[in-house]
Length: 119
Image (tube, rainbow, N blue to C red):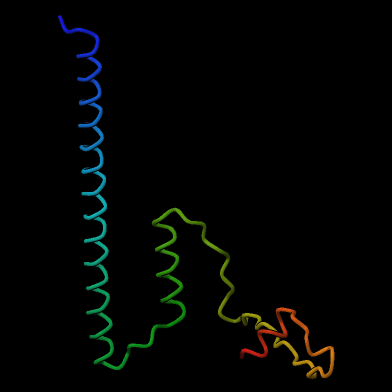
């Protein structure tokens, strides 16, 4: 009949072995998934090379949109509402440049002023 310290040691050893087994299983799954993605990327690269040789390498927006939707759907991500091709995407308005300051006002440390000096 095992004593109390022996059974605690055995339980601790078993828990450690279970943790190692679990981590190996997770690592194996991750490696398999990474290899699958590398294979898919190789196929996409080959397909792009074939299209480039035939002159049809430019991806259309609808093809890119379809690929993005398939990617999001396969991972359970939400699919955003996509505007129709006829609807133009609104552009961000350009920030008007302000006149340069002189004198004591020149020591303005606002973020916009600093960014304009850098750019």
